Length: 174
Image (tube, rainbow, N blue to C red; front, side, top):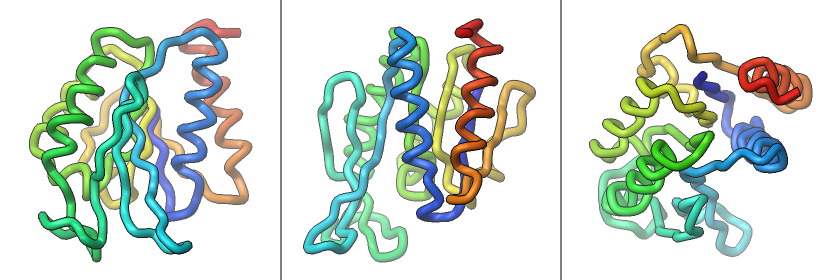
């Protein structure tokens, strides 16, 4: 099963993915993959990191000062996706019960290897929970095992409970 979480910026996609990760780990499931937290400097968003969930390794994904392909005001470090994110996701495909990818968006998709790896994950049997940029969602192939959830601040908790129910039914966790 593939659970894709989308919504407007600031809607709680990453928070939702984090809550689901905590839930799965609390149930004894192994979780791997990546998260891409923002980096703030002086109260303003300066950039984004990519973090390997299993090892804790970090790299700078994008910043206002990074040279590389641009997404808005951020330069993207494609190399960190190829050298850190892709191996983390590939390892999770082999070793973990669930893959977390937060986020599949324009910055991350600047990496050809990341795009290829996401396609492999989508074609695999492994459980995926991913935050997906709303403009990226249309490019992901529709498959029977993909469930898309749209979050917004008003219905975040209801969506979380619906996903927990779905996970319980899927994995017999209840």
